[in-house]
Image (cartoon, rainbow, N blue to C red; front, side, top):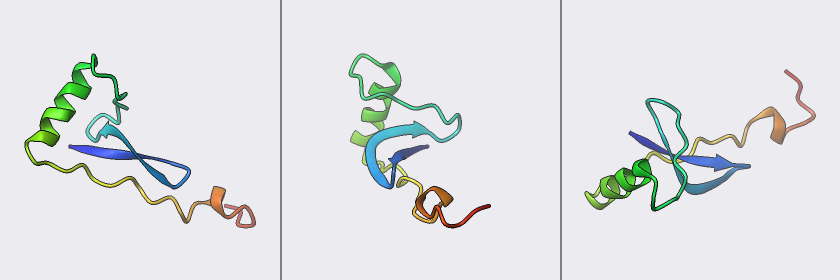
Length: 64
């Protein structure tokens, strides 16, 4: 249902809705963030951030 975001290979505690790709800002006033926190409180765990460690950006000597 949720997946953490990835920023330059660093996993952040900012979730994304997997079905829409919508970023959920960590704002207590945001209804989606409140739903995410409730989902976590039920014992759920978001999917880890994608591993982009093998991307072309990380290896500029490799062109696509």
